[in-house]
Length: 260
Image 1 (tube, rainbow, N blue to C red):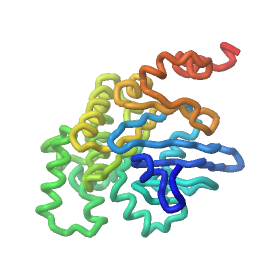
Image 2: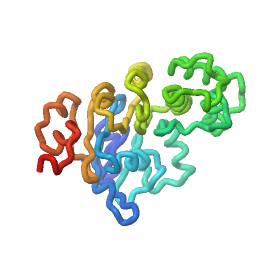
Image 3: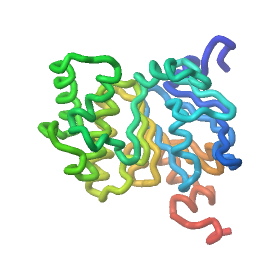
């Protein structure tokens, strides 16, 4: 157990530590005491049924939502209750890829990717362009600087969103359904990209997905969120071998009523 002055994140080497996180929306309990540790440099995949709180949990990790109770530690700092100004410092360390890519339709690819740099006060156009070109190379979109979002495929939009998420070289990236709406071939390329980012930059990654193929491909560990709590944590192999009926129902895509 950490001491009074020591966070869970610093005491156990975690990049992110979640303690007894609770959140109700519209009178419905969404998160009911989530406990979670994410080690520096690992990829944790969060799976669970639709509407089970996965995206709500992700938004708490970057301060886009505030919990009703509990604590969230990021790089040794408890971010619950932080002001927007304080959260700005945390968000420099944590990038996020939203489900839709969340690109600005009126901006070019280059302008979209450079947006976080401009928001941070960077004005040197030459430096910004060099950084943009660097991340475009990382996400395999070299030379696409001048394109508008409307001319991009779904997979390209995700890659541009990812380039924007990593432009400030965060320690951690959060992915909200990164393969949603993509065909299997493009999904596989996104999965490989997530893995490559982890290996190249030692980034900590948290991936929310309902796609079990993606979960097994990218995850060092998998956490199954069930009824507002972490019901299972383990490696992909341990998940596959788990004979718990709730886990098996999810993995096989069965409704609970089919087996109970």
